[in-house]
Length: 318
Ligand code: XMP
Image (cartoon, rainbow, N blue to C red; front, side, top):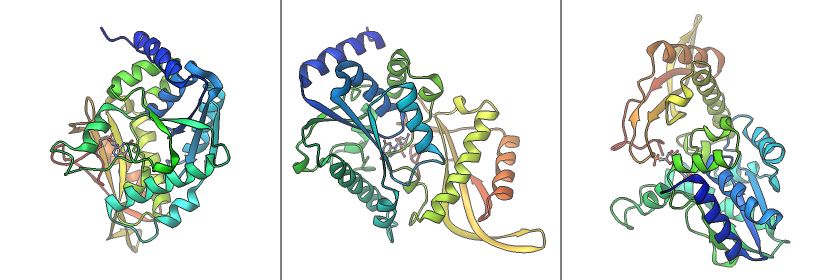
């Protein structure tokens, strides 16, 4: 029978055997999966592991600072923080197609990573927090020819990096990864975090993700998540997110006409992210969140709630 303890023991043994005295590089995303992987590998081989956490400018509000603190202070991980937000934003200029955005973000990520370890060429392995559903969905339900979304953390390492992959949670589902993380001593407030896609807010600002629009979305997302936590609803849903639509509409504020953007709120219940139902959040709650967003965020004058399930919709909008 599967238990987190036995999984951890087996993985530690097999990582030690595979890696020997070589060095492992791990990209941290700020999410549960990569954090569990890094903690597990750190436990197996100590400081033969080096982690890199890239600020791609597509993270949540205050995310980079607060997660760096967790990595270094609570988990003692050997991690280097890299601010690459301007590189990502300039490469995303003029790009609005969802798959193209995913590809650009994936490519720039590899470039930054490559540059970061350039002088440190003795890494032999790259560790990733790939999950079972990531593997399945990137190859698609129908077969390799019809990719639904190219998950930027699956596959696709350039030849020249010559790193072998280590993916210890590749056969696990999210709830199992969380169990492993708890057993490894990662704090509960972190373990319970909702999934967050590798391309981040880049695929939640529909259309071109400019700094200005990303900042608007960060404020909206912050209010939504803060209110879910305040009302005890955060742990009731699998994932909650805000999407900035590239559409302006007319509103009225005092005596003034406004012509501003719309935020779509999305909250779903799910077991593994492969299928999902829209969460039946209380009307009073939605009303409160909507009021706060429209009153507090200059640039937003309309909030809508997404009532589509997966399939046929997906959880993210892009
Ligand atoms: P969709 O939108 O395909 O998402 O229903 C299913 C789950 O996967 C997350 N997701 C990603 N996670 N890299 C990731 O690590 C990605 O590129 C990516 N795209 C979607 C999404 O947030 C949801 O939890």
